[in-house]
Image (tube, rainbow, N blue to C red):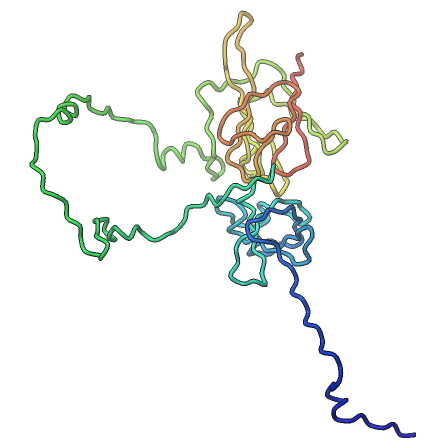
Length: 309
């Protein structure tokens, strides 16, 4: 039996209800902060999956940190949980995210702290001369020149600046270079070798690793740059020169010198933590026995112990 062919009207869908247009996929609102997970890393940035949304957002390499980042792997790893902020996008189909505008410890909004490359003040010319609203030069009033005023007398009475023969520029850089790498820190004037036997015990989860004996020199550099560091930190979230553990002579007691340990974060990307609290970068923080140290997003914990106690 031959089947009857459909009529032209039936072939063109006449009489059928019109198809419903697919609703656009909802996107996260600009300015909102979300907890996400890194799902993919590319040379230009990283894609992050946001809770509650199917579409992945892109964190461009320029939005990873307030400093210049050469490689995305310096800051992020696949599977890492991060806080991100949704940026306004000219393309409504794309989701742009920022990592540097959010505090990774608390999720607080830090705002855009990067310097803006805006236009000059319209009231000023390119050479710095003031202008009127119509673009013409604004000339000041001619004032008589006064000589011998009190300001000039103070300037004449001020002592001359003495010459400074301290090392600067390339000389200072060369004196603080090890294996071709310029160190980010220099030992303070009160640096001293510890008089007690300090240990740094390392824990990876429940596993105890080989401890470090940190009483043999006055300072220990921590980071990923193995050419210069004393205590390596191999986690991708740690910086090349992440922090420094410094022993300093704080006082003299009846029994001898009193040398105490201090930790200073060297402006790392993801910070240093003492007992779970993020410390302020580029400032020495005194360490007490049994303090727990953590660096970046690494799960390893370092416990400082005075073996003489």
